[in-house]
Length: 296
Ligand SMILES: [Mn+2]
Image (tube, rainbow, N blue to C red; front, top):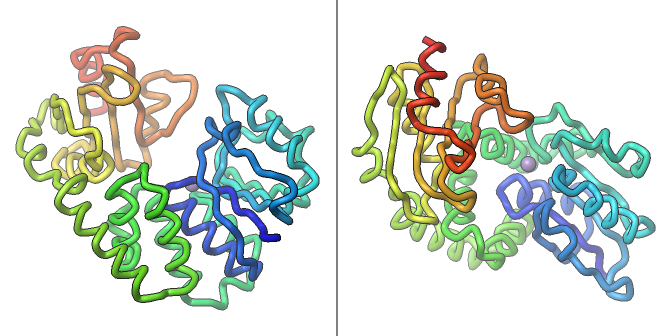
């Protein structure tokens, strides 16, 4: 019987899973999911020994979903590592021995490194943590060459579980065939989701803010586009109007640490560096630019 790691399918999830494998010397099966899809993870108790969870936040819209997963697998959960906010809502359900939660950490990778400090003697693990943190905080300029390879390969098709599986295996075993596969995926990224040049040409500066009104391809790397737009903007703020999985929206992004967009737009919660406003809820580009004007 094998162990199972349940993790997020992004770069932080992939790297923190690999770090857990290195730290605990386990050889698990890896299951990728998201907080709002945790109810779809069905593990047959006869098929695994222990469960390790990393980078899976509390599902804030449906706390019961997280609670029910914990209760279903309570006996098997060995470690749960996370860095997202919201765990106080489950403080009576979790114990601090197995649930290693650091809501102030920038990434799950960082929490793993701190929880299993012997990893710090492994230069490879230390570098992996840096790349995982750079990716999860949107500081792509800090990625190492290996970090870029992983970032691009994973973003070539964010739905493709095979890429994620191979990425974790490569980080642990470093086999050349897996590296070749990831390099091919990184090239696919450069031709597809990473091809942001044509859209950058359509960006306009309004009140020192970089604005893009454009229907973008579904798979485009919005993070990379935002980072370039923020560079173009003297105020270091980018605004995009278009349609996403959330419907017609306006997205605002900034790389500034002194700016809390959740506060600026008086939202109940969210990422201070990137907020999504629904146009169905009444938000317009004019209104957004008017509010941002006051930042000058
Ligand atoms: Mn994360």
